[in-house]
Image (cartoon, rainbow, N blue to C red; front, side):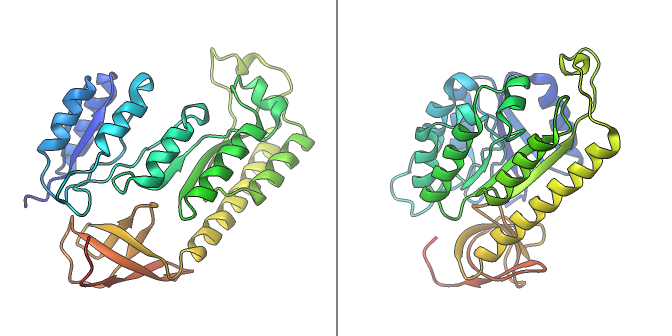
Amino acid sequence: MSGVIRIVIIDDNMSSLELLSTALEREGLSIHTANDPRQGLELVRSLRPRMVITDLVMPRMSGLELLRALSAERPGRPGPLVRFRISSLEPMDCSREVVDLVATRDSLASHFHLPLQHASNRLLKAMRRPYTLAEYAALVDDIRSRIPAASIGSDIIVGFPGERDDDFDQLCEYLARSPLTHLHVFPYSDRPGTVAASMGGKVEGGVVRSRAARVRDIGQRLTSAFRAAQLGTVHRALTIGDGTVAVTGNYLKVRIPPGCDRNEWVMVRITEAVESMSAEVIRGVQL
């Protein structure tokens, strides 16, 4: 095997694909691109066993159909040749059908990234987000109940114009009790030409930084709790690097003992989940 990882990205933004392709080439990787989902399927079928495809960017209008086709089982094979990780979905695009597919298809990683942005309905409306906190919470609670080991990440903006103390308290209260497993925290800053930049009620910079630090602390605690809950669990994982690190379907990078090749499917049991993530390789099981 050449060790080259082929990444299939289906998108119509060719400029971003060209930039990504250049970056990948510097790392010795290659990239296929396709504007037509059918072309993407043909590329997937051409891949050899054990090669990984990551960060599939789904066209909005045909994402569900594409996921169904890409994750379809292949007769005569006990496990998928590749596993897809959906890099990010807007909450309103993460339908129950999408969750159904992730819950039932081993070729779809049990990973979700669903930007919340804020837990104040007043600020969600100001941000023009087309959902409420209750709708978002119902979505991630459903994912957690149906896929207990799923990784569920989110984006959070702190210090958006008009954010009051009670808005921020509501955000922290929700996050602390949520089933989220990791947070990307973005302190608000004006971007010229945007609607938000012309809004009143700007939050003082020091307050924004303090709030961001508090939310990041909550995020770290969520991540630690999620990792601790994985202790003793068994996962199908793909080795990367020199073969001593494996990535599980729920997006955990775990250290494993030497002896595996790169791009090799292995079954692992999580043995350490406090300071770092470690696992043992379970031999003699069907992958």
